[in-house]
Length: 152
Image (cartoon, rainbow, N blue to C red; front, side):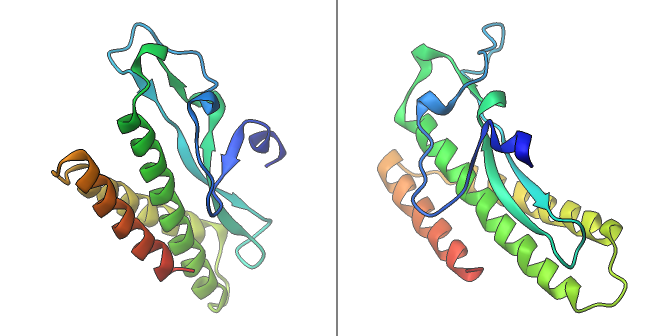
């Protein structure tokens, strides 16, 4: 966890990712204008003591300077919030797993795969919301805030 903390921003209320936080070297051969790396990391020795946190990895995220737009910033923050939603959901499931005797790290990994698949499906659904930019932004953040509150 120590090394991850050196180049990551962990989700917390009000945190913002700025374009200066993209520390990776841009891939100018790529057709993509940017790459953002979000993740969830388990911290702890076992199911009984551990928890999961959402993070943005600065060293794996890059952006081409001529591509900086508000749409990209929106995408980054939306994706970060989605990872936090599913981190909270994962932690909720971990709490439930603690009540089951003999729950193993293998059980936790299986649950993590399920959570990640749910996250990817939701991320795809959010990406398909077709509204003008400002309406889309308001709708998505309203949806995300509602989901964040579900697992507070």
